[in-house]
Amino acid sequence: MLKRFAEYLTYDIVQLEQGRLADALVFFTYDTIKIFFLLSVVIFFISILRSYFSPEKTRRILSHKKEFIGNILAALLGVATPFCSCSAVPLFIGFVEAGIPLGVTFSFLIASPMVNEIAVVLLWGLLGWKLTALYIGTGLIVAILSGIIIGRLRLEKWVEEYVYKIHTAEDLETPNRTFRERIEYAQHNTIDILKRIWLFILIAIGIGGFIHGYVPEDFLLRYAGPDNLFAVPIAVIIGVPLYSNAAGVIPIVSALISKGLAVGTVLAFMMAVTALSLPEMIILRKVIKLPLLAVFVGIMTVTIILVGYLFNAIL
Image (cartoon, rainbow, N blue to C red; front, side, top):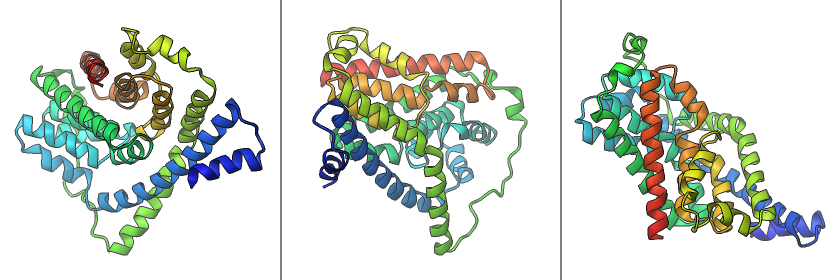
């Protein structure tokens, strides 16, 4: 029904003829309505859930766990508590101050922006449950393994000294609210998030529409196709300077896959955009020293590239 509406708007209302512009407009209209509807519903219900689940409670859950168990729990918790990159600094400070191992902290910070409920719903809607499960599994593996490696390297000395001197309040719990108040909070949070991300999503959908309508298949396949040995590293390098959350990059991913790019290459691109974005690195630099930042970026880059190659080989 939604696809028919997009075609009706393009061909009957706007009266475009069949062609690249019409294809791009159909893609843009269809994905815009679908994504914003899904986002509104998902953010609303997850906001209700998160009203029971504060960051402070998250830190306490992870503080007393063994490291390997902590990495797994932290990655899973990152899926349920999708904090944006602008929250990285206070969360990092709070986690370290609470005594959570550094590797566990990074498992959370990697999983949180890369694998979250918005990404799951949008991927499912655009690409199907198989690719969604694939992305969730690989994202969790990347977060867990990267956190374990960082923990094993014992890099606490490269955290900025002031982080250990900060004491967060012990009573910063989510206040007791009535269910009506939680509904009002969810409504406010949904509107607030949509206000902050709507433009980025529209830009991303526009890029996806342009790719879908104008970029020839052979152009993308020539530079990032299955015959190009360096397609995955190129995709990662392109993804790092971009700034988007998972919701913003999924329309681009959908368009790239429809053009014939290998799934592993596209997943590597998406992971680089969401977990290795340059703005997030700038924020993290405020609390960690350059050697630790370099180790983090290096481990993530190598892991994401290996994941891309692995799934290009098996799919």
